[in-house]
Length: 454
Ligand code: SF4
Image 1 (cartoon, helix red, strand yellow):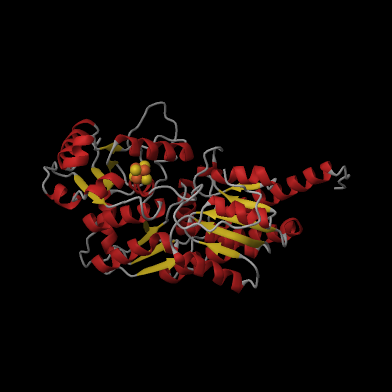
Image 2: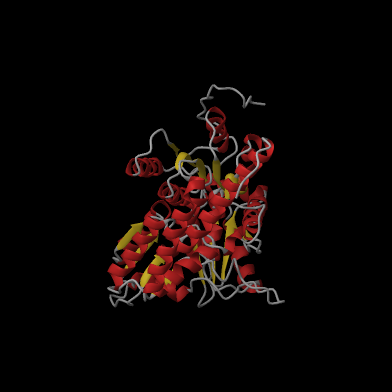
C-alpha cells in the first residue's frame, strides 16, 4: 500500500488511483434517458451495462433502464453485428420504445464494430428510430460519453426546414433533474420558449404512482430533437460538456450558439439571465431580481463563517468550475480544484477565475484522481471539501467537512431533486457550506473544551 503520510509527491503517468470520473457509457445512458420513450442500449457485454445502470441508480435512486447486445466469446471474435440486430428486434417487440440509442463499449470499440453500417442494414419498424454514438471508455469520461450521445441524436435526427420555430435550444449538461427544473423555471420567468435537450426531469425524478412506468412522462420528444435544427439559438450551459453538441448543431443546421458557464453562483447565473434577456428582448422580472438580492443578503449575513476558508473541489469539469466561481464570490479560497475528465481547458478556465478574484497559490488539475487530491491535502490541508461521495474517505481521514455536490452521490438521498444552479441553488449551497463549517467549529471547540457563546 502506498504511504499516504509521505510528503513526497509520487509522479504518476500510467496509473489512476481512485478515479474522479467514470466511464463514457454512463454519460451516454444518462443523456439517452433524457429522451422520451428512449431505450439506451449498450453494445457490449452484460457486465458493462450492469455496472452503468447500477452507478446511475445509486445516484438517482431511480431505475435506470438500458438493454445490452450481450456479447459472449463469439461476438468478441466475429463482431457484434448479429447480436445488435437480434437485440433491436427484441427490444422493439418486447419493450416498445420509440427510439433505441446505442452506445459502444471498450470491447466493441476494440474489435472495431461499425455501428453505422449495422444500423443502415437493419429492419427498423416504421415510425421508430435507432441512433448510435461511439463511447470508447479508454479515453474520456462519462462527460465525454454524455456529449457524444447528444451529438448522436443531433446527427441522426435534427433537421433544418429553413423556418425558425421561435424557440431557444437549452443544453443543460450533465446535471440533476432538480437542476434542469430550475433552469426551466428561470427560462419561463424570462418568458423564453425553449427546448431542453436532454431533459431527465420527469424521468429520473418521476413520482411514485404505484405502477411501474418504463417510460415516464418526461424527456425531450423525438419531434423536439428534430426541431432543434429550427431553433433560433442554442444555449449550452457548461462550456466543456456542450461545446461539441452545440458545434454539431451549428454545422448541420446553422443554429448559432452561446456557450455559457453552468449557472452556479451569482455571476454565472447573471450571465445566463442576461443571455436570455438579450435573446428574448425581455426585461428581467422582479421575482428574479428579488431572488438575486436575497442571495447577496445571505452571502453578507453568513460571510464571517466562510471568509478566507480554503476549499478543495473535485468532480465533473463544468460543475467544479461553477462551484469554484461561487466559493470565490463568497470570499473563500479554492485551493485545489480537480476533475478526472481530460480537458486542459478546465485548467485554463480555473486559472482565469483565480486571476479574476486575485487569489494566489491555488492549483487546478484536469485528468487528475482522488489519490492526488489526497496527497495535496496531506501536504497542505484545507478547511472544506466539496464533491461527490468518493471523496468521503479523504474527508474522514483528514477530519475535513465534506459538502456533497455533483456526481456521484450514492450515500445520500434527495440531492437529485434539489438544484445547485441558479440563485436558489446558490442559496442552498451557501446553507450547506456555512452549516458544515459551523458544525466543524462546534466540534473543534468541544474538543478543546471551549464554551461557545451565541
Ligand atoms: S469495459 Fe469499458 S465500457 Fe465496460 S464498464 Fe469497463 S470501462 Fe466501462
